[in-house]
Image (tube, rainbow, N blue to C red; front, side):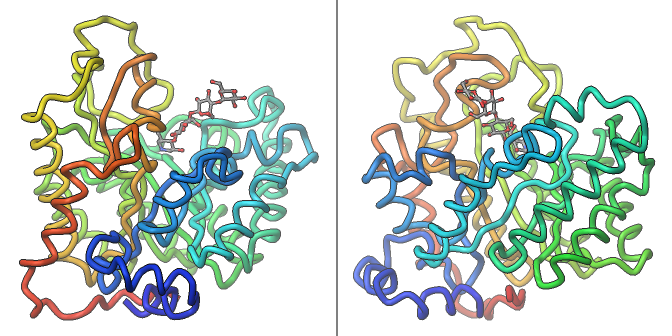
Length: 378
Ligand code: G3I
């Protein structure tokens, strides 16, 4: 892929590292296919753990802030913005030659208290416009892309009830893209959601994308979050989604990939941060370690997914893991607090897992006649 190649040639220190470790670095192994991203938090931005830093710079060429660019962090009080961590992140990413996918401008969750307390439409509209304009302007030449709107849909494809739907109306999604485009014309603009590979919710996302396009507003991509369970990775729905979204002329991204190995105590498959269940030891079966059988199943799940991604690499711009190591995953505390999950590619000691090795190995036997990636990330 043109953009990924540019990244490597532009940074001599990182490219030297890459050359010496060519066959074992994720970002190099997939450099002609799609960007490989990870989520980052404060400790990673402050580089508190050198071993973690080493893994990040070795394997990833894209970062998404897991929390520090959410509205409650950037604007904790009305009109008082706190850009300290976000500024550090974009500087660090630049030094490391990584692209930043900023996350997220408009999301019903993690809103500042002052917004959640708002009763009148004018106040919500003011926050909406001011927040988007201020934040997107500040980072306009510093981030590669924005998740402009996050999780606006219900499972049946209808609009999720939120303060934005309630006070601004269905047009809030189009409006958010329009405002962002106006102040940040060069930045890629994405809609991001979980379960949008599922047919009904996918239809809702397609409807939103078409609405944005019909309004003459730019949308560059759609992010399928990819919070899946090892016992239920919906491969056919994922492939159908890649094809249907790409047919709309937008890039497809897998933006928050992780695969839970634990039982799901909820009645549905969701990544709604508001969902919770009580702790129960039966729901935490691998507190003492992950059996090989499950480790292998996880590895096979990742392998199947990446084989599918490679099959459609001409439509896929980026695959981002939602964290580096199992120790840092949100899935240790969601939807049940205090469990031990194993959803990522590196273990708690930051050692690559079987899943990692299988991903590296699949490129060895993927036919070279698939051509190069046609998605132009620039
Ligand atoms: O901010 C407090 C901090 O002051 C305190 O020290 C700490 C102690 O527990 O809690 C901190 O807040 C937590 C925050 O993560 C930062 O660690 C919140 O309680 C916790 O709810 C929050 O969880 C994040 C969640 O979004 C809500 O923002 C997860 O880390 C993050 O992985 C998750 O990410 C979302 C995506 O943004 C959207 N898609 C779904 C995905 C998973 O839910």
